[in-house]
Length: 160
Image 1 (tube, rainbow, N blue to C red):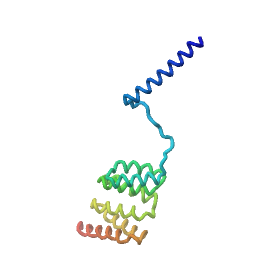
Image 2: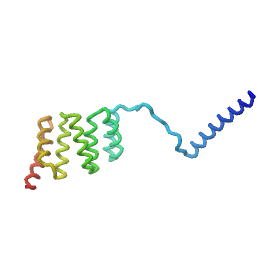
Image 3: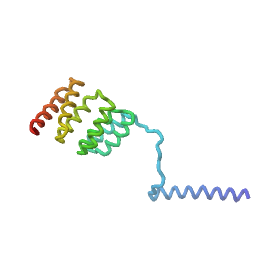
Image 4: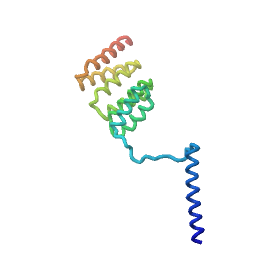
């Protein structure tokens, strides 16, 4: 009886080994590697997203930014920018607003939302206030933010 148990156990392990081998050889998708701990930091996900974005791989960039956003609020700005590039303006607006809520002193988020309103030709009064807020928050970038403000004001005049 001990001999039969040994043979039975051996056959069982051999069948598992054969099944696994066949699965790998045939490209079976039933086995998955599960990563329990993300080896990348949120900052590394953000940097990887930037690299994807520079290569024009916006969907991959968005995935990395979403992962980074779990710990880094600045990632919402990057998500807004990526969706803006994809001309997904509703999503871009959502993420710019979220960036402002999470980091109320982030002047770029205010400016980018103002620019989005300019490009869409809507909410221009709000866009003007956003650009002014960006200028007040970060005077070092006032040339960029003033450009947004001037463009919005020009468009407001045309629409009146």
